[in-house]
Structure formats: structure tokens, C-alpha cells
Length: 472
Ligand code: HEM
Picture: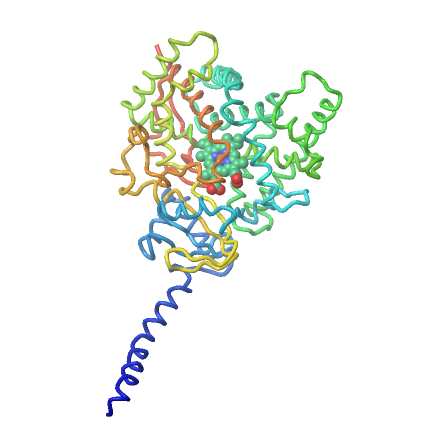
């Protein structure tokens, strides 16, 4: 071999050895995340639901994080290819790339249950709705409503709890949150009307996270029918309110409904669109808050030392009250109680997570996610991880003292621009209920080991029956 051919041979050998490496690197760059996509159409939806219905909702995500990658895995849910982004970095990526790399996406069942009658895209419509909401449920507005919510709460407890020794707590709490939302958002307080509206709402909540199969008897089919019935019912009420508004009646409440009716023509909407939004709003606030309150009561029944601390805080507020009803300042003093509710939402998040859609081909953790794939963040990828919450199964409200959990680890309300706009309203309703119930009652569980399932929100299967005893 002469000296001239040596460099050529070395170059060829280098190329030869680097080829597999280049191939591997390139392959990895364009590779989809690890995971499995299950059966056609159904995908892994059944495993996802089964995990919730068996009372271990975190299992679906935890198992796959262990099996495939703690950062990202692929699956197929509700008829869509989905990349689940995990851990605080996954949450941060999704929350901070809203409308840059990812956009909101709702399961097709949502469009069917809440049909839009406006010409905007679903995203634009949702964005406008989202912008409008804070004006009615931000801290400033809530300062005005605190006493009203307290008065509804006191009335509810007097009617439904006070003369009973035993109650099915979850059902009553749902009734309560429903009546607060209907009164505050839509001005509805007629008990018969509330009763008639309340049934279909539960059916719709289950239908939202169901398989996109609209056949007689499926959850989606039942939800669509329930939605049609509620819309028809609400439409009558909304039309009447519009007439009152046009006649400038002074008694017309200045609530979200009045606002929507006064501005609907600017957005090409009609009363039907307002009816859809109205019940979307009620639905959004209903199960999230009632789930949280139910589990607050459950943990307090199981942990007497926490119960005593909450009671101590609430009694001191009760004793310092100057009027009949709670004021905004009183609610701001309920710091320990809110730490307790926050710990409840860490261990039992009402929302498991939410979807986004990839707006373009994107790369995350070295894997590619094609445009149009859905992305999902899950509270279960961080809420019970010992790295962020030491001794994660222990109920410990002190985690929320001081600086609180590390960024993007505690996400019951989501994060970034799409963070739940009803968070402050939720906080106020939860705390006002806690104040009223604990200053009136002690309670104990009737069923010692009642199973909890998630469908689509966590709930004790028998509705959490409890025995009540009045405070002395
Ligand atoms: C404990 C109570 C609540 C919890 C845990 C909760 C949780 C959440 C979560 C996790 C999201 C999804 C964020 C995302 O897509 O990443 C969300 C969105 C939303 N929530 Fe709540 N929520 C609660 C109460 C409420 C209430 C009371 C209202 C209405 C007054 C409300 C209205 C909404 C709306 C309109 C959205 C959609 C926001 C958007 O897509 O931009 N929520 N909530």
C-alpha cells in the first residue's frame, strides 16, 4: 500500500464506522417517542379508563413512565395518537409553548356535547370565553360575592345537613356547588328548576371523557341527549332574561349571563350559543369543586389531628367575625385550611390532565412528535413523585407553607396561559364550605374502606356516607 492511498483508506474507514452512529443519531432524532398505541381506534383508552375505574388512576402513566421513559411516551387515547409529556420539564414545555408549538385540543366528544353555533374556530371561541371569565370570577369580583356565597352555603347546610344524623356527602356537596354556580353565573335559584337541571349534568360530565362512539347506550350518546335537553331548558330561561334586559328591568342581575347576552351579537352569537357556554361554565365548575370538597371531608374524617387544626383556625375566624356573613378578609385568613385543600388536590387531583395539539412537527427529549398529534400532561407524573414531594403518600399540608412546591410539580389547575381561570372562585367556594361545615359538625365515615374510582373525576363509589354530630 503506498503513502497516498493511506489517507483515503483512513477516511473510508472513518466513514464506514461513523455510518451506523450517524444512522442511529438520525434515527433517534426522527424517532417517535417509545410506547405502544394499542388497538385500532380504541388504542389504549380501555387501559386508561380501567386504571381510573380500578381506583389507581396514576397507574396508567406511572407504569408507562417506568416501562418506556420518565420524560415522554406515546399512546393512543380517544381515537388519537398521543404523546404524554411527563415530569416538571414536560409540564413546563406544554404550559410555556401555548399557541407557539401547541394549541388547545378537546376530545371530539366535547364538540358533540357542546356544539358551537358561531363562525369562529373552536380555539378562538374558547380563547374569547376564557378572556371574559376572569372579570366575573377574579379576586375583585369575588370580594363582592363572598357574603352571597356564604349565605347560600348557610342556607344549604340548614336545609340539607342540619336535621340529619347520616348523609351521603358527595351527593349533597354536588347539589351545593351546583346551586352556588347557578345562582352566581346565571341568577337561577328556584330549587325545582335546579333539581331538573342537575341530573343531566352528571351524565354530560361522564360523556366528555368517553370513547368517541355515538351509538345508542354509549356514554357519549347519553351525554349528547342530556346536553340537548339542558340546552332546550336553558334556552327558555335565557330568552326570558334577554327580554328583561331589553326592557331594562332594574332587578336583572349583573352576572355572567347578562354580560354574554349583551355582547353576543359582537361575536355573531345567538341565544343558543349562550346556552351552550352557560352550561359549559356550570359543568367546568361543578365536579372539580365538589370532588375537592368531598375529599377534604374524607381526609378530615381520617386524620383527626388535621381536622383539629382546621377547626382551630375556623373557630378563631368565627369568633372574630363582625357581621352575619363571611367577608373577603375572613377568607384571606384561612391559610391552613387552604394548605389542607391543596394537599387534597395533590393526592386526589380533580383533573387528571389535559390535551394539546402539536401545531407543527416538534422535538422533545430527542423524540419527534408530528404535527397534529395530541399531547397530554398528567398531574400523576409529578404529584406522587418522591423527588418533588418527599414521603409522597403522607398527607402533609405543610408542603404548601413557605415557598410551596417546586415550579411545574404541582398542577391541579394546569399552568401557563391556559391555567384554570376559575381557580380563585374554586378557592373561595371550597373555603367557605369548609368554614361552615367544620364549625357546625364533626363527622365519621360509615364505610371504613369505601373504594375510590376516577370516572372522569375521583369519587368514593358509594358517595361517601357519613355520620354527623353537632359541635357542642
Ligand atoms: C377545584 C376546582 C377546579 C380545578 C381543580 C380546575 C382545574 C382545571 C384544569 C386542570 C384545567 C385545564 C388547564 C389546561 O388545559 O391545561 C381547567 C381549565 C378550565 N377551567 Fe377549571 N378547575 C376548577 C374550577 C373551575 C371553575 C370554578 C371554573 C369556572 C368558573 C373553571 C373554568 C375553567 C375553564 C373555562 C377552563 C378552560 C381554560 C382554557 O382552556 O383556557 N374551572 N381547570
